[in-house]
Image (cartoon, helix red, strand yellow):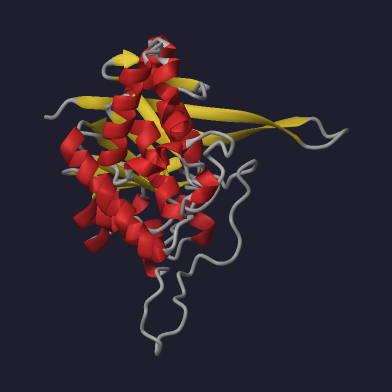
Length: 317
């Protein structure tokens, strides 16, 4: 078994939501009892509809958000006990929008060097050498060292964001929709770059994405989230060829095809998404499930494992 980089056990995160001036407050379970293991060198993709808890889970894995209950371990140590500077050296994020994640008043060299300054490295020559090495790694020419973000294309800005994340040589990188703000022609370049960097620097990725084509291209394993729960986990090839959970099947059925003779696919999920403040009883997916059975509305599935394939559904209990 490979070294475990991140281990989340029964992780829950609640938020207190105001219901109005005279209606009091209510708890929203953004993440509910998630178990997840990420091994060194793998690319784990988190997929699911907007609002299912992917970004909240990522923030807890980054140490930016404390969990309400459960434990998150980084390299065998509880993440809450890891010193902040050590945590920042080990885990780094790449954000979704390169147009808003870079300071427009800072030059590119200064933006990439900032994590080194935070770690206490103040030698100008050392910083410049490391920044130039990292720019070369991500395919940025040296002339951009003194440029401003508004002088760069979207793809170049995302390469700057990647360079900033990698300048301290972290072990884990969490990518939140790393290509969604880019042109299709640039997306493949960034994905290939991320793959090359993973092999060269022995990185571990957690990738959040709505784009199943991106997931199929880059991920080695996929976790499907629905309403705060992970309902299916499998290696990428297995999940795309033999999905078990009805929600996973619906997601894969929703992918658009380039064939002009085919209509927009009907995933049978309907237009409404359940209220996360008042989730359905039993299996949260049962109101939208084409395979729903009587027990689905009353009893939450416990989850079962078939080899490396985990599925949380009464069809497989």
